[in-house]
Length: 300
Image (cartoon, rainbow, N blue to C red; front, side, top):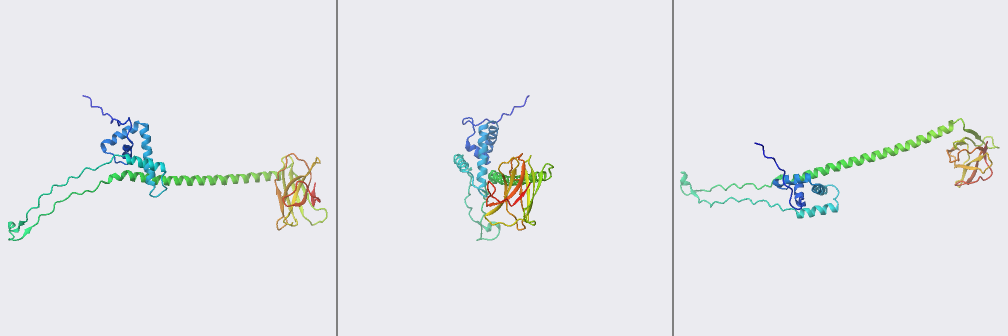
């Protein structure tokens, strides 16, 4: 004889979906035991009810967070309050009061052989405790614990992202500096680079400077020393004088430090510009697009 097959609980009859108030009670673990299995089975097969149950869990979690964290969104709070307002009211069954027996008349102690005139009052009846079951708050405790753990995980994830962004920015800065250093070393050590010394024509102990220039790559490094200080509204400017006779090309402005030293490193010069000479002039602050005579330092 074959065993009878177990059939799953039938889905709710309200349009084929579980009522929202039953989903709220199920999420809070307040649904009666005889309906819990039916809601669980139906939610596992119904995507709509399963999604609504997920939103309900999210609303409960958001409300639980309001105790210590930020307030939930207005939409989540409104939806939860509307569902709670529609939920079934669980009315506990009335506790039957024990029938009170009529108070017995005092019994003479003489009946117990202790003499006449004294009485013995009977003990009061024992009333059973009416403490509410504690398992009703289990759902809220689980939701609050889940919310706290989610908050810690979110903060750890955000701190990790910030650390990664800072490390990525530092790595990009170091790579840029390494590229500049490599380009500078290549400009100084390239065998095709020209090296020119610039010095004043008259004073033998005046300022001196040197230029390393690579016409093919358009790279230039200028180093000077023993320069005289200038007024604040004046500046030194370096010039590249092309070999084809075209106008001089400005190669950058500079001010000497307290020791008279200055430099111009990797200015923006067009590639393949063959230079005949280099010169330095004194211009107004901000530089000029053509040199102002005289040229105080020159070299070719």
